[in-house]
Image (cartoon, rainbow, N blue to C red):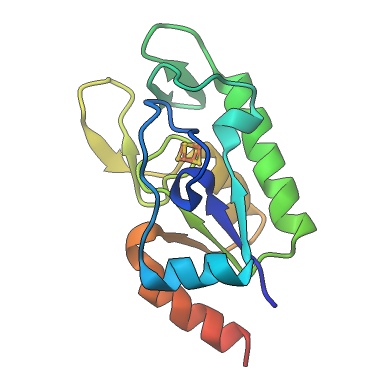
Amino acid sequence: MKKILVSECLYGGRIVRYDAGDVSETHPIFLKWKEEGRLIPICPEVFGGLPTPRPDSQRVGDKVIACTGPDVTAEYTAGAEEALRLAKENDVVFCLMKQDSPSCGSKFIYDGTFTDTKIPGQGLAVEYLRNAGFKIFAEEDIEEAAKYLEEAEK
Ligand code: SF4
């Protein structure tokens, strides 16, 4: 059975988001994958040693900066490296990643000004995963991801 790497905040069960919020995915396809045991939940920011809740952070050029001031690039980088290690270890067929996050975003991210402004871009963990050749889907693209899985398992 092919495995899927998934943002842990979508997987649910453990509170990992910066705002301690719950964004558990409830799409029937996702729940089926969960039941089948094919999902590998990962939270790059928790892997990087950051607490929950934690200050909102955004990518600013090559760095990741917290809204409270500290440079958290090292923590985000450590988390991205661990996400990539687990993707390789589990030989995942693709990754389903929470949109807009400075780690897991795959289409848009916030622009680094903390003014609630999104720009096209990707989070640091997604950058690592894509650079290693992994396919990325956002949670809004679960049905497209399901077709991709079907093809991969033929
Ligand atoms: S780093 Fe990714 S998995 Fe962790 S809370 Fe943020 S979006 Fe979810």
